[in-house]
Length: 142
Image (cartoon, rainbow, N blue to C red; front, side, top):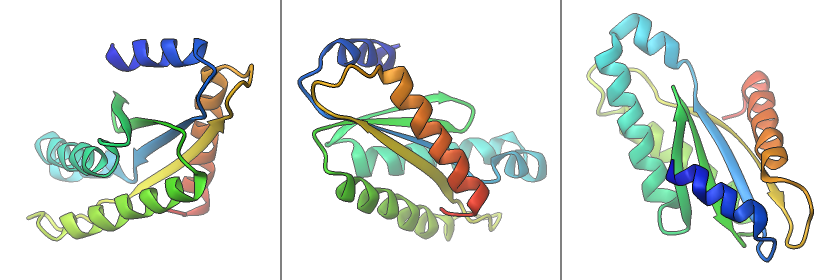
């Protein structure tokens, strides 16, 4: 609910560049189906912790549902966004070593930016980020 309120406010507030990062876990259904929902919950907790560690001081992290998460950043250069997404991938790989069931946690992501003053809605930006995430997942890019 707080993410929804933030997005509504930012949608009206046009004085910032707003970047939306849309992320989901790769093969999350496999984790639940193979190891059980308890292990899936562990993976979700790791994922949310890593996202908060990487982006928490820069912006806002929220879970949309299932294994899909969103990050909202203001006035953040795209090259920095890409670097931070790569950090997320590296940290997930590192934390995977601690899992007793040996699953490697990875994510696919996509992001899009609405530039300051643009009339484009944040819903459109979210859809662009989501499309890029699915394209990256399809292409096998982490």
